[in-house]
Image 1 (tube, rainbow, N blue to C red):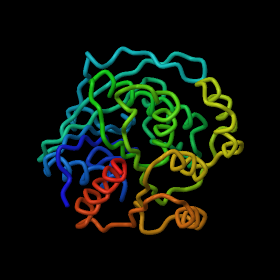
Image 2 (image 1 turned 180 degrees about the vertical axis):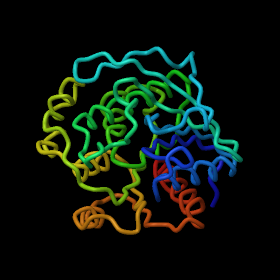
Image 3 (image 1 turned 60 degrees about the horizontal axis):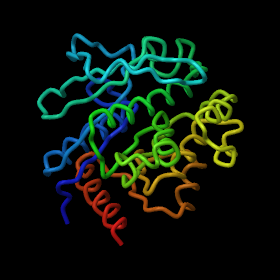
Image 4 (image 1 turned 60 degrees about the vertical axis):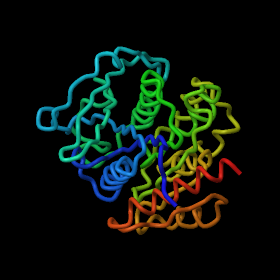
Length: 273
């Protein structure tokens, strides 16, 4: 059973070598390249965090894709798209950038370990930025694979904002869950999502949102889930056991590509039944 001629969009918080941050960064780097090598098409996106060395990694702006403005929490934010190649691979990574949200040198926590209060808005901007860029590219993914809590709004946009868009209407959504600290998000998040046209019945579990709640919010709108870390929080472990969705268990590095290719194939076959 092999995956061929599929279009897979990977969206991740971290990707090595740009951000070498454990299992997520490794999976979001290895899996797309392996899928590409099998004869499929890929597009890969991550945020352009301020700690990424643009010169070393040879990032450059893609002028034809930049220049759009996205409204987040009633304010206009300029969307910049950059791109870089992964050394020793035929793989490009697109970066979502914005002066206000991604210039700071730290990733999601300040020097004292505090979770940035605007992380929810950064995640919203990232999700919208990816989907708008994919539309601009005129590319139609079969599978959208989200890695990490910062991608949790992608399923919401695909299912409830871009649901009639021919770029995404047939896409299958896969979400990888990792062992991340259950930091608290801005309690105004439901209000911000209301401004995006998201109805209150979808937001009932985000009244006092934390990272785990955001994961569950994203997973709830997905077709399949991957356990990206060997261990996740107790609450998340229980949630994964009780949910009624296909689940790919944790895969060690040498099995990542094969396991994901078979899982993607199964998710696409399911759609044809």
